[in-house]
Length: 195
Image (cartoon, rainbow, N blue to C red; front, side, top):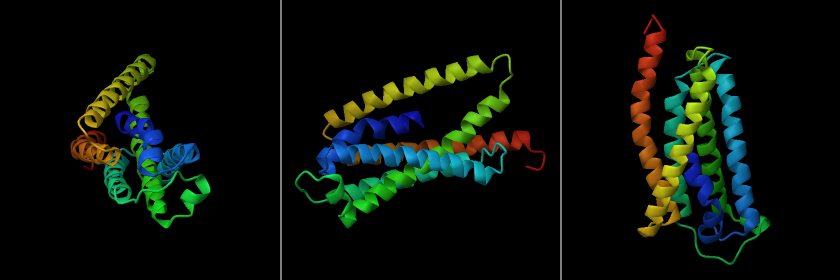
Protein backbone atom coordinates (compact mmCIF):
# COMPACT_ATOMS: atom_id res chain seq x y z
CA UNK A 1 0.00 0.00 0.00
CA UNK A 2 2.83 2.41 0.79
CA UNK A 3 4.48 1.65 -2.56
CA UNK A 4 1.17 2.40 -4.27
CA UNK A 5 0.49 5.53 -2.23
CA UNK A 6 4.00 6.91 -2.65
CA UNK A 7 3.73 6.68 -6.45
CA UNK A 8 0.62 8.84 -6.45
CA UNK A 9 1.65 11.28 -3.72
CA UNK A 10 5.04 11.95 -5.30
CA UNK A 11 3.47 12.68 -8.69
CA UNK A 12 0.59 14.97 -7.63
CA UNK A 13 2.44 18.28 -8.21
CA UNK A 14 3.63 17.26 -11.69
CA UNK A 15 0.32 15.54 -12.48
CA UNK A 16 -1.63 18.67 -11.55
CA UNK A 17 0.62 20.95 -13.61
CA UNK A 18 1.54 18.87 -16.66
CA UNK A 19 -1.51 16.64 -17.15
CA UNK A 20 -4.42 18.43 -15.50
CA UNK A 21 -3.06 21.90 -16.40
CA UNK A 22 -3.83 23.18 -12.92
CA UNK A 23 -1.97 25.40 -10.49
CA UNK A 24 -0.75 24.67 -6.96
CA UNK A 25 -4.32 24.89 -5.63
CA UNK A 26 -5.27 21.95 -7.86
CA UNK A 27 -2.26 19.98 -6.57
CA UNK A 28 -3.33 20.71 -2.99
CA UNK A 29 -6.88 19.65 -3.80
CA UNK A 30 -5.56 16.31 -5.10
CA UNK A 31 -3.79 15.76 -1.78
CA UNK A 32 -6.97 16.61 0.13
CA UNK A 33 -9.07 14.24 -2.00
CA UNK A 34 -6.51 11.46 -1.51
CA UNK A 35 -6.39 11.99 2.27
CA UNK A 36 -10.17 12.18 2.65
CA UNK A 37 -10.53 9.04 0.52
CA UNK A 38 -8.17 7.05 2.75
CA UNK A 39 -9.99 8.27 5.86
CA UNK A 40 -13.34 7.37 4.32
CA UNK A 41 -12.07 3.90 3.46
CA UNK A 42 -10.83 3.40 7.01
CA UNK A 43 -14.20 4.42 8.45
CA UNK A 44 -16.02 2.27 5.92
CA UNK A 45 -13.80 -0.63 6.90
CA UNK A 46 -14.96 -0.32 10.48
CA UNK A 47 -18.60 -0.29 9.40
CA UNK A 48 -18.21 -3.27 7.04
CA UNK A 49 -16.25 -5.38 9.51
CA UNK A 50 -18.64 -4.71 12.41
CA UNK A 51 -15.71 -4.06 14.77
CA UNK A 52 -13.97 -7.36 13.96
CA UNK A 53 -10.77 -7.93 12.04
CA UNK A 54 -12.11 -8.71 8.57
CA UNK A 55 -9.15 -9.73 6.42
CA UNK A 56 -11.54 -10.42 3.52
CA UNK A 57 -11.62 -6.66 2.84
CA UNK A 58 -7.96 -6.75 1.77
CA UNK A 59 -8.52 -8.32 -1.68
CA UNK A 60 -11.53 -6.05 -2.24
CA UNK A 61 -9.38 -3.03 -1.41
CA UNK A 62 -6.54 -4.18 -3.65
CA UNK A 63 -8.89 -4.80 -6.59
CA UNK A 64 -10.52 -1.38 -6.16
CA UNK A 65 -7.12 0.30 -6.02
CA UNK A 66 -6.16 -1.32 -9.33
CA UNK A 67 -9.46 -0.65 -11.09
CA UNK A 68 -9.48 3.05 -10.24
CA UNK A 69 -5.75 3.50 -10.92
CA UNK A 70 -6.33 2.15 -14.43
CA UNK A 71 -9.41 4.35 -14.84
CA UNK A 72 -7.39 7.35 -13.63
CA UNK A 73 -5.02 6.63 -16.50
CA UNK A 74 -7.93 6.45 -18.94
CA UNK A 75 -9.64 9.60 -17.68
CA UNK A 76 -6.49 11.73 -17.50
CA UNK A 77 -4.89 10.67 -20.76
CA UNK A 78 -7.67 12.21 -22.85
CA UNK A 79 -7.60 15.70 -21.35
CA UNK A 80 -6.94 18.52 -23.78
CA UNK A 81 -4.18 21.07 -23.21
CA UNK A 82 -5.28 24.23 -21.43
CA UNK A 83 -3.87 27.33 -19.78
CA UNK A 84 -2.98 27.06 -16.10
CA UNK A 85 -6.28 26.55 -14.32
CA UNK A 86 -7.14 27.74 -10.87
CA UNK A 87 -9.19 25.54 -8.59
CA UNK A 88 -12.50 27.16 -9.56
CA UNK A 89 -11.83 26.79 -13.30
CA UNK A 90 -10.59 23.23 -12.79
CA UNK A 91 -13.72 22.20 -10.88
CA UNK A 92 -15.89 23.94 -13.47
CA UNK A 93 -14.80 21.51 -16.20
CA UNK A 94 -16.89 18.34 -16.22
CA UNK A 95 -14.09 16.05 -17.49
CA UNK A 96 -12.06 16.75 -14.37
CA UNK A 97 -14.76 15.29 -12.11
CA UNK A 98 -13.99 11.78 -13.36
CA UNK A 99 -10.34 12.28 -12.43
CA UNK A 100 -11.37 13.46 -8.95
CA UNK A 101 -13.78 10.51 -8.56
CA UNK A 102 -11.08 8.03 -9.62
CA UNK A 103 -8.63 9.51 -7.15
CA UNK A 104 -11.18 9.51 -4.32
CA UNK A 105 -12.22 5.92 -4.98
CA UNK A 106 -8.72 4.51 -5.37
CA UNK A 107 -7.71 6.11 -2.07
CA UNK A 108 -10.91 4.89 -0.39
CA UNK A 109 -10.08 1.34 -1.46
CA UNK A 110 -6.53 1.88 -0.16
CA UNK A 111 -8.08 2.61 3.24
CA UNK A 112 -10.09 -0.61 2.97
CA UNK A 113 -6.86 -2.43 2.14
CA UNK A 114 -4.63 -1.07 4.87
CA UNK A 115 -6.81 -1.08 8.00
CA UNK A 116 -7.39 -4.86 8.18
CA UNK A 117 -3.70 -5.48 7.50
CA UNK A 118 -2.58 -3.33 10.41
CA UNK A 119 -5.30 -4.80 12.64
CA UNK A 120 -4.14 -8.32 11.74
CA UNK A 121 -0.54 -7.46 12.56
CA UNK A 122 -1.57 -6.19 15.98
CA UNK A 123 -3.96 -9.06 16.65
CA UNK A 124 -1.59 -11.85 15.62
CA UNK A 125 1.56 -10.54 17.30
CA UNK A 126 2.35 -11.38 20.89
CA UNK A 127 2.29 -8.33 23.19
CA UNK A 128 5.97 -8.80 24.06
CA UNK A 129 6.95 -8.61 20.37
CA UNK A 130 4.29 -6.23 19.04
CA UNK A 131 6.41 -3.05 19.09
CA UNK A 132 9.26 -4.76 17.24
CA UNK A 133 6.90 -6.22 14.64
CA UNK A 134 5.27 -2.84 14.02
CA UNK A 135 8.73 -1.24 13.77
CA UNK A 136 9.82 -3.89 11.24
CA UNK A 137 6.63 -3.26 9.26
CA UNK A 138 7.40 0.48 9.19
CA UNK A 139 10.92 -0.26 7.93
CA UNK A 140 9.47 -2.42 5.15
CA UNK A 141 7.01 0.36 4.28
CA UNK A 142 9.89 2.84 4.03
CA UNK A 143 11.83 0.44 1.77
CA UNK A 144 8.81 0.05 -0.51
CA UNK A 145 8.51 3.85 -0.74
CA UNK A 146 12.16 4.06 -1.78
CA UNK A 147 11.65 1.32 -4.37
CA UNK A 148 8.60 3.18 -5.70
CA UNK A 149 10.63 6.38 -6.08
CA UNK A 150 13.34 4.50 -7.98
CA UNK A 151 10.74 2.75 -10.15
CA UNK A 152 8.88 5.96 -10.96
CA UNK A 153 12.15 7.70 -11.77
CA UNK A 154 13.12 4.86 -14.12
CA UNK A 155 9.73 4.89 -15.86
CA UNK A 156 9.79 8.67 -16.32
CA UNK A 157 13.38 8.52 -17.60
CA UNK A 158 12.27 5.83 -20.09
CA UNK A 159 9.70 8.26 -21.52
CA UNK A 160 6.55 7.16 -19.71
CA UNK A 161 3.97 9.84 -18.98
CA UNK A 162 2.54 10.30 -15.51
CA UNK A 163 -0.79 8.68 -16.48
CA UNK A 164 1.19 5.73 -17.87
CA UNK A 165 3.05 5.45 -14.55
CA UNK A 166 -0.36 5.27 -12.83
CA UNK A 167 -1.39 2.54 -15.29
CA UNK A 168 1.74 0.48 -14.59
CA UNK A 169 1.16 0.88 -10.86
CA UNK A 170 -2.44 -0.28 -11.21
CA UNK A 171 -1.43 -3.33 -13.25
CA UNK A 172 1.34 -4.25 -10.79
CA UNK A 173 -1.12 -3.84 -7.94
CA UNK A 174 -3.55 -6.20 -9.72
CA UNK A 175 -0.82 -8.85 -9.75
CA UNK A 176 -0.31 -8.32 -6.01
CA UNK A 177 -4.09 -8.44 -5.48
CA UNK A 178 -4.27 -11.89 -7.04
CA UNK A 179 -1.58 -13.22 -4.71
CA UNK A 180 -3.01 -11.44 -1.65
CA UNK A 181 -6.39 -13.01 -2.35
CA UNK A 182 -4.83 -16.47 -1.99
CA UNK A 183 -2.89 -15.32 1.08
CA UNK A 184 -6.00 -13.87 2.74
CA UNK A 185 -7.95 -17.04 2.05
CA UNK A 186 -5.27 -19.12 3.76
CA UNK A 187 -5.23 -16.72 6.75
CA UNK A 188 -9.02 -16.82 7.05
CA UNK A 189 -9.10 -20.60 6.72
CA UNK A 190 -6.46 -20.97 9.40
CA UNK A 191 -8.57 -18.98 11.84
CA UNK A 192 -12.02 -20.29 10.89
CA UNK A 193 -13.04 -23.90 11.50
CA UNK A 194 -15.93 -23.61 9.03
CA UNK A 195 -13.64 -22.81 6.06
